[in-house]
Length: 118
Image 1 (tube, one colour):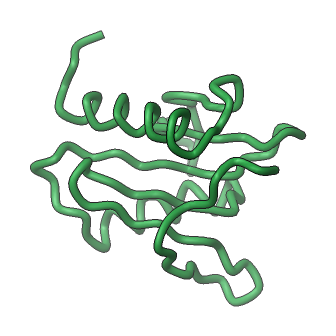
Image 2: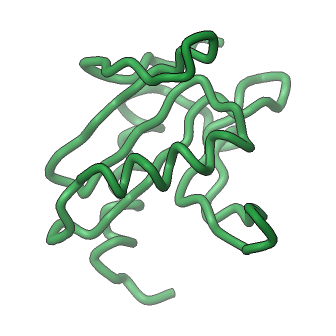
Image 3: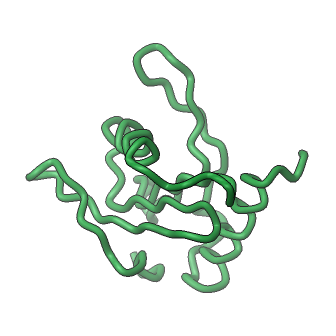
């Protein structure tokens, strides 16, 4: 695997999830395939809970890529299918964390994602 700028961000976020947030490595999946509107996409990082449901979707961008509405639209499209409770968007320098409000069909910005405890 080539260490592209996006891959560098992904590896650091995996380290953050394991070392800082205490998520077990066994609950983390990288580059999982996803089909949306007959198109194959890949999620950067998925974090599952103990019963196998997706708890967090992480979208990683290279540090030179600005996080904008298009980035949120991308992860929101993924989440229409995946139904994750949390979204995490990062370029390694800027991080956005959201929880899902499925009732009102919106995300709520957070200061951080929760530590592992589910």
